[in-house]
Image 1 (cartoon, rainbow, N blue to C red):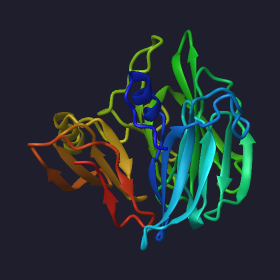
Image 2 (tube, rainbow, N blue to C red):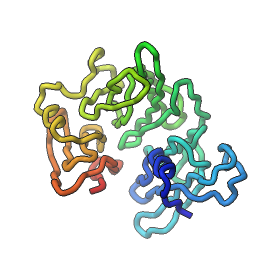
Image 3 (cartoon, rainbow, N blue to C red):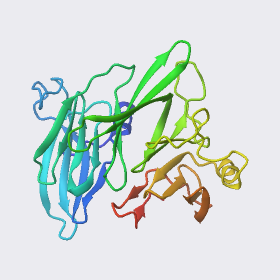
Image 4 (cartoon, helix red, strand yellow):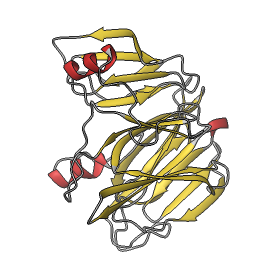
Length: 285
């Protein structure tokens, strides 16, 4: 049974549910949600026992609407996620575990999470599903928040490359880039400045000291500063969408504004869902 959020704690729990609707391939849509645990005194798939809510996914045929498969992953917790990868496979983050499954719900790889930092790690996949990233946060009394970016092998979950950066959150990723909002203070709070976007490139071609995505004097940066938008999302390796709690949606390619959707009467949300081929995307309006 789908758990409809009512209390403040329910809405906060849903904030941790990543990619609640995701295309695994052209014919399969994964819908993830929380549902009531009929046996809250029992542990579900290695999770902490006693939870009244579990993390559940249903795989739907996009042509017929029929159910291809479904699975209860474990107890609801911080950073539950289902992320689509290439060839129909997907990542599941379920509390202490992260696993890769095929579209037929066969387990491919798994690892138990370590939390060397101060927060649970989080994951993000590129629109093509070819690249997978892990982010871990530490708070340093002298340098403030720090974030380590790990580039993972999507087939084995082994780390291929790591980079320690100033603290950030609200990341969006392509096959070879991570765009993020930096932490703007060195106190114990993480406060992103959504209009000041930094970039990490896996080929190390980005600036070392100030890896800003846009020159702050450029026309694009000035346009974003006036927009009031709060988030960025890659819909392909070349196109970045800027939106989030603002009346516009901007498509950015090579640092230039290439298209814009304006809707002065509405607030456009920041939850952009691209197709794996990068040709289409959906957003709340």
